[in-house]
Image (cartoon, rainbow, N blue to C red; front, side, top):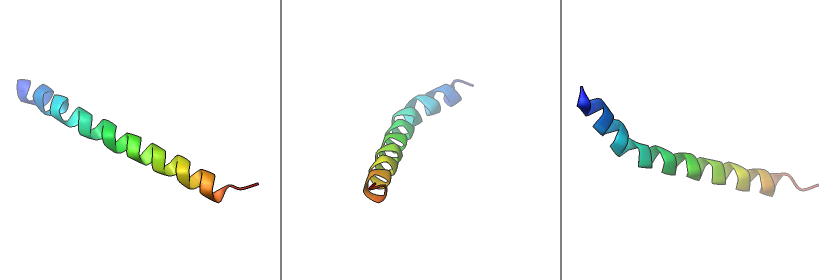
Amino acid sequence: MMNIYVLAFFLLPFVAMIVAVVVLARERWVRSHQRR
């Protein structure tokens, strides 16, 4: 059952990187489309 922890440990950096890219893209999109 240790394979689950190993898999999660290896996938954690990829998930964090994807989340960071999504957050940055959303924030940039909001700034570019929200000009008041």
